[in-house]
Amino acid sequence: MTGQVSKLFRKKENLHRTSGSEIVKKDIKSMYQEELEGMLAGMGEPRFRAAQIFRWLHSGVKSFDEMTNISKDLRRKLIENCYISQAGIEKKLISAYDYTVKYLFSFNDGETVESVLMKYHHGYTSCISTQAGCKMGCTFCATGKGGFSRNLTASEMLSQIQAAQADNNIRISNVVLMGMGEPLDNFDNVVRFLRLVGDENGLNIGMRHISLSTCGIVPRIYELADMKLQITLSVSLHAPNDEIRSRTMPINRKYDITQLLKACKYYTDKTSRRISFEYAMIDGINDSDACAAELGRRLRGIIAHVNLIPVNSVEETGYKKSKKDRIRRFTEILAQAGITATVRRTLGSDINASCGQLRRQTIKENSAKEV
Image (cartoon, rainbow, N blue to C red; front, side, top):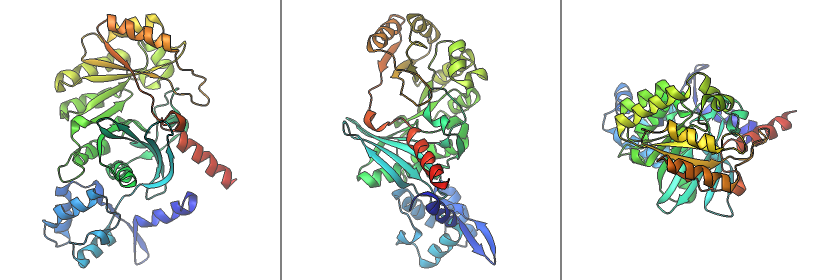
């Protein structure tokens, strides 16, 4: 089922009706194992069951009845009080050029997000969303054009990985939080996801195999640094100065480049982890020799790598990607300043693998059907 019918159906999965009233069920897959132990103790069940249930949840089961080593009585209690978050495949696009798969996933309430599966020589990487939509309003990004709906739960982030694994019969070894949304704007749920996805009884994906991309919510970068999680921090910089960055990224009006780079320096000092600075190359906007030289000066003293990204063509922006010789010259100037830079390999270009566009198209189609 898709559209409004599936949305109404899925909402009921999260509710339990008792004597005419509705009780909101617990999101069991977002729980740490110790939280499961506490819940089970409250049900009069032994704590050791928590480890069994935790493993089942992170193996990708879709119903409590699949938990065959759990008693029927306990399964009934779980059905009455909890629900298992799932990511259903609403749409799927496969690149003809490389093994890149773009998904439009729907959750239990019918909300949709995009996710991308990519194949590299080192294994499979899942690029997941952390919010349905985005509030940040970056002018070159398709996600923000579709508006913001809500934050995703930790379980919904996990479910994107599980669904892609099951659909392709593979194991995903790397995760990037670089899909729809700003991860640090959904800080608590994202941190919970990071701890769950790295659990040895769960998906067991090590922190060094996870990248988190942020447009620069400065206070949260400090908090993340103090946690010393050993993830790779990717900062969407996209400009060498406040004039250009404030024009293209509204977040810069709250936390300017000086504040942002100070927080980045703190992160590298605290974690000893290199930061990847994402830089969308936009023709005539931020790709001049002067921009490259200024960027080199800005990043001096930070353990950094610059990831140059030819900007995606997005309806309504009017932006065009920088020409190849301009990107090459930009890279050379950064190298002269001692800054390593590479041009991101384009994957899934024929399926618009950058996030936001498929969801926007679906929203427009559904709106047209309702008129």
